[in-house]
Length: 168
Image (cartoon, rainbow, N blue to C red; front, side, top):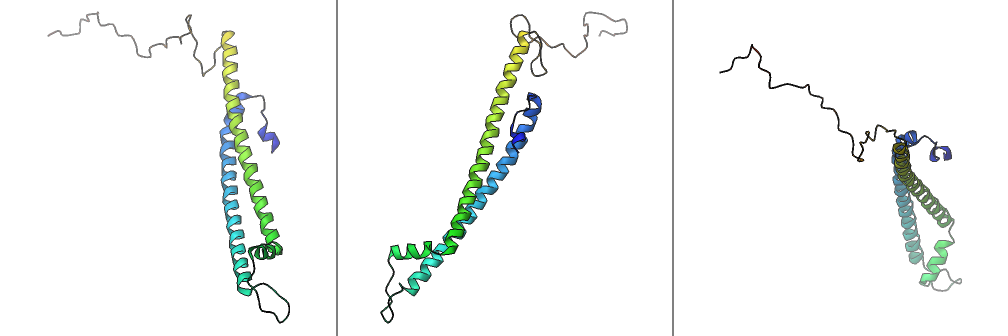
C-alpha cells in the first residue's frame, strides 16, 4: 500500500511503524527469493529431462533414413519451441519481478528509517535552540552539558550526634 510507505508528518508515529514494515518486507523478500529458487529448480529439472529425451530419441529425419544424433543447436531449438519452456520462463520472470519488488520495499523502508532518524535529530536541534527539550534530550546547562540529575537518595547528615547513639 503506497499510503503505508509515505511519511505521515508525525515523526514519532513513523519511527514506531517503520521497523515493523522493514520486518514485514524482509519476510516478503525472503519468500520471494525462496520462490525464485524453486521456480529455477523446476525449470532446470524440466529442461534437463527434455534434453535427455531429445538426445535419446535422436534428431528427426526423412522417412527411412537413419536417426541422427542431434546437435546442441537442434536440442536448444527443440527445447525452446516447447510450450512448457514458455510457461516455466514466464514463472521465472514473475519470480524475479517479485524478488526485485520486495527488495526495493526493504531498501525503501531502510532509507525511510535513516530519513526519520535524521529528521528527529534536526527537530531536536531546532527545539534545543528554542530552549525546549524532549524526553530523548535532557535539559542542558550553560556549557552544553546535560544538567546534573538530582540525587534520588535522601540526605543523611553524619555530623549530628544523636543522644540515642551509643559510642563505644
